[in-house]
Image 1 (cartoon, rainbow, N blue to C red):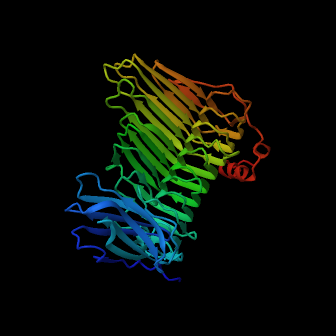
Image 2: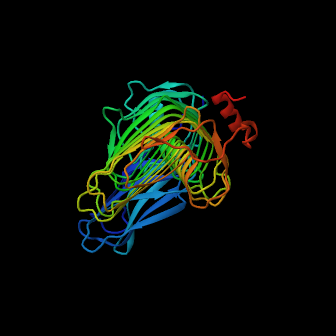
Image 3: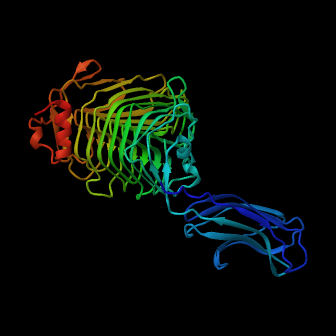
Length: 518
């Protein structure tokens, strides 16, 4: 086993120079946060007698005392104390550096404090215990390798890379499993890994992950992104691949008025997501406000330059919107998909391909609009694959059931409600023809109960198609749908020959194996 990265030794020495007369000004460097190529520190400078006459510099030197870089602090009139958080990037790995705080006093440079630190070496760190996994937070650019299965039963789990501490290193699970993880605290970016920027998470299994419980759902009032693997992957170079999530559940309650993004793998994805499965998962979300809500069996929001390939999901998605204090300008937009809540992956050709879902969705809506409301808009987009898609999809199918129940309450006369509910895509706003997508009909039902004041668009395939393209899609098997207790059969294309319908062996084999089609 390679040597675990040496924890950097930090030496802090206060120095007073004889460059000018003795000074009462002092400085402190504290809270070193060191990676392979960066250092982040808190700097405090105190000048009780206002002796500092110019800028105060934080300078960094290498082990040969060669100048590397600097940043400055400036006292405002009347200030006698300064505090700031300083970051230096682009440093060499496994190297020694010196930080010096230098002030201008009586037109001379005076060194107030000096601190020495070592950057981490670019070595692989082998993870064998729960404690070592959680310790990854000390090095956000590390190269980690999982050496065995880890059972987190009884471990007080703390997300290693929460908001503000994004991961840009690599984690190779080598096919091992992290199990029985219980996340009991909400974070802006909630998941086993939390917040990934340009990092890479590959080849790992997650089993029995719980985010909140039915008795004690995690609650938030702020913008939130949640996924079993990660809440947020913020960079186009971020990678999540070869991941299996099984037997996991989340219970989440939000009063956010901004954004709520929830996914079985990632909440919001801006990078590469490939070869991922979420099996027997349960996503349970209660929205009590009017946030922009996106929920997907795999990913809540797939961003413009992201990609999603070879993904499958089974289990259930349960969403309850019970509005409180919804009034004027409190518009509600909800996007729910068996795979993707909202697909905005418009920057890459065929960004979404080879995906399928058998997730059952249960959605209950009650806006509870306030009496004084004069103008509000409520939109609901639900699709077996995608709630709303602005980009094309190739080679995909959905075989689950959808139930939507909505009741109007008093004072909703001045509201506009539009529901787009479909067996494949709730709303399609792309410019490119969809190719090879199928709604599996046998024993898969769609049941909708809504009030008369809802503008309902329903279809087994696409409920609202902004471009009316000649897509290559259809229903395999029978159709079963009811709207307000009335059976509905839509005139949609039928697919009889699955073997020659898809252009991908991967999706053809998955469909035939799942539904015993020969």
